[in-house]
Amino acid sequence: MDKLKTIDSITPSQWGVRSGCISVNKIRSISFLDDQLAIISLRGEKQLLLKLRTQCGGISKHGYSYRTRSGQLCPRFDRLTQVQSGIKCEIESIQPYIKLFED
Image (cartoon, rainbow, N blue to C red):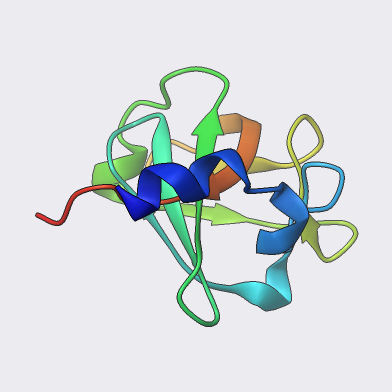
């Protein structure tokens, strides 16, 4: 219940998200849940949900690479490239993520 109450008070800036972007220096890892959603683990215990604009076939299985121009990962400007096919996948959003239930 405490986690549910916390959700209403969250602001993206508390997670280091500024104008929808996150500094790559804050990113510890990015793990894809499927071909459209990934969890970004930050230094410390916080996590973000990264959503791609569309399904990016095989990105969860084959991996990805990315390159930023500004040292930040930003929706609409940056893309993840699926390693095997070279398909570029646009980031739609980066938002705070709180896991409500443990596996």
